Amino acid sequence: MSEWTFITRHGTVLSLVAKHSKITAIELAHHMGITERAVRKIIADLYATGYIGKKREGRGIRYTIDPALSLRQTTHREVAIGDLLNSLGWERDD
Image 1 (cartoon, rainbow, N blue to C red):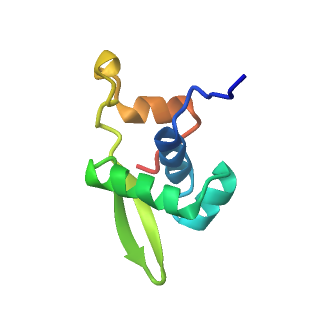
Image 2 (image 1 turned 60 degrees about the vertical axis):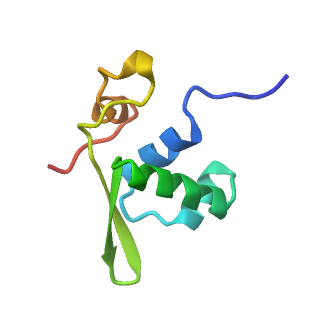
């Protein structure tokens, strides 16, 4: 029987970035059990679609989230990504 999860890899990266804004791709890969290359592809996807922003801080990057964007599934476009992240334990720093 194959293992599956309710949250996709993109959702997992987004939730971890929301909780740990200075997390690295290597740390994400370690937490998720996937390659750093796969994580970097996911980050690129999230950045290209506006779900995350990136700001260089010294040698690292601080990520930001746009909580107003909706989920991408056509069946749940009325749900803001911030609402999903809140249900996963995200506490905004407003």
